[in-house]
Structure formats: structure tokens, C-alpha cells
Image (cartoon, rainbow, N blue to C red; front, side, top):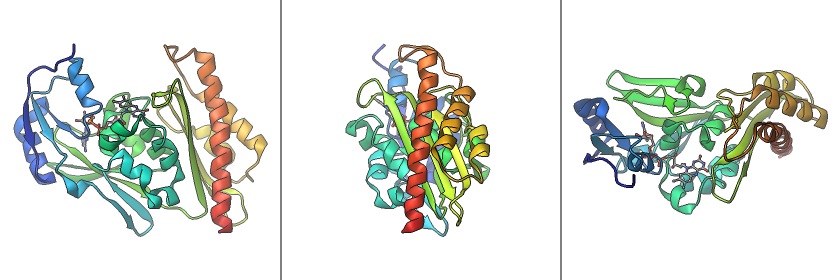
Length: 292
Ligand SMILES: Cc1cc2nc3c(=O)[nH]c(=O)nc-3n(C[C@H](O)[C@H](O)[C@H](O)COP(=O)(O)OP(=O)(O)OC[C@H]3O[C@@H](n4cnc5c(N)ncnc54)[C@H](O)[C@@H]3O)c2cc1C
């Protein structure tokens, strides 16, 4: 199939207008942001919305804003904007690491953080990034606004807590002192989805020990962060033996499937190796902010 099933199209002018349109047209309507996931699904007839509600005019959802000890990012912020933002990279280098390996400039110029999180593809890089950074999702609907942790937001492959009459409006990231983060992905060719990827975020106490840590995996059959690795790392001085053990725990916790991207043992090996690498880099970045 190359041509979507027939649909009607309307452009929302504001968030309130988009919510009205979603309420009016019911569960057979879908919002379209960058369209880089929804349009292919429509062409394959895996999605058959009767109404497409275009939210590309909602400039009120396109922002990056420092607000006290958190960074707020609007749902319509494009991948390219995230990739090029010095402010985002300064607080969260993991975002630039991930964005630089998401698809290609054509996809990045249109695709949005909101669309990526709502698509909830198991190979989606930003879902892992948001989980390890402890981000919160701000959702608006007819009942008002609700704020969910990424754990509650993400219900499983292609499934989120966003209802059919709701919009994801914003993602909020806590800014921590003496922190560092990193993301590394293995792909079959440049711009491809991950065979496997890992992300880590750490913050250091004043004495240099790890105050808090989070490790997440992409496309490796683990929806949550690796709790065992976080428990191991907390209170310890960053060192190679610790990263090796955390890698082993990540490999044990994941549950990859064999597919055209590789066999299970190779993917487990990636979970192990990539976890070590991102922890090494995240800790060294955190130590640099401590010195600076
Ligand atoms: C060739 C190709 C390669 C790619 N490679 C990668 C990759 O390596 N890594 C990666 O992470 N991604 C990759 N992507 C996906 C890309 O990141 C998409 O931009 C992203 O998945 C969807 O974002 P979008 O804005 O295009 O969303 P859309 O396609 O417009 O929407 C996706 C879904 O989210 C819903 N939605 C969108 N915005 C909202 C909102 N604000 N509130 C509620 N629901 C909403 C839509 O209704 C739809 O169901 C690739 C895409 C392509 C086409």
C-alpha cells in the first residue's frame, strides 16, 4: 500500500482549538505533527484516521525555556532545534548525542519531540533519553492539565497515556548540578533505527561519589530504566569495575528479540558494551562540570 485511506484535514490554530477539534471529531481523528511516523503508517494502512488535525501552526508549543531548576521543551520542538540548541546540550549532552544519530536532516527538520514520544516506537531514541533524565510529560485535555513521569507516560510499544482527546504539550527536564549524561547507538547504516542503544545520566555528590544514576536501553526489550544498575552505582566512586558490572546488569535485564537487525546474543552484548561506554562518558562529563 502506498496511498492512505481517504481522510479529512483541518489545521488547528491554537492548543484550545486543537482540543476542540479532537473532541468534535472523536477517536477517529489523529493529530499530525512532523508526520514522519504517522504518514508512513497511513500509507501502509496501519493507521486510518478519518480526520487529520494538523498542529504545525501551534507555535505556542515550539519553545525551549529555562524555568528555575528545570528546562521546559514544547512538544512541537523539532529534532533539528534540539540538536542545535547550546542550552540543551549544556545541561543535557545526551540529547545532542541522540539527536545527531536520529535519522537524517530531512526527518530531523520536521519530526518533533512530541511526535516521537507519542509514537512510542521501541526503537525511538528520545524515549530513552527522557526516561534517563527523569523528564515529565505535560498533557492537556478536556479535563485540564496533567503531569506524568515518563514511566507513567509510556505504557508499552506504541502505547502512551495520552488519551484520544488529549495533546502532549510539553516535556520538563530537571536540571541537576554536577551532572553528566551520554547516549550511544549502534545502527546498521547512518540514519537507521537502532540495533541497540544505551543512555545514562549521573549526578555526583561533592565528594565525587555518584549521588544518582539512571541507565536506559533502546530497542533492546526493556521499557524501564535498569533499576539494578542505578542501585549498584549510587554512593560509589565512578570507576571502570563499576561500569563493567553495570553493563553486565543491563545485559541481564534486557529482553531483545531476534530480527533482521541481529540475533539475541549480539543485542545483549550491545546492552553490556554500550552501558559501559555511556556511563564512562556521563561520569567524565559530570566530573568536568564539577571542576568548571
Ligand atoms: C526514515 C526515517 C528514519 C527515522 N529514524 C529514526 C531514528 O533513528 N530514531 C528515532 O528516534 N526516530 C526515527 N524516526 C522517527 C522520527 O523521529 C519521527 O520524527 C518521530 O517518530 C515522530 O515525530 P513526528 O513529529 O513526525 O510525529 P507524527 O508522525 O506527526 O506523529 C506520530 C504520532 O504521535 C501523535 N502525536 C504527534 N504529536 C502529538 C502531540 N503533541 N500530542 C499527542 N499526540 C501527538 C500522532 O497523532 C501520531 O500518532 C525516523 C523516521 C523516518 C521517516
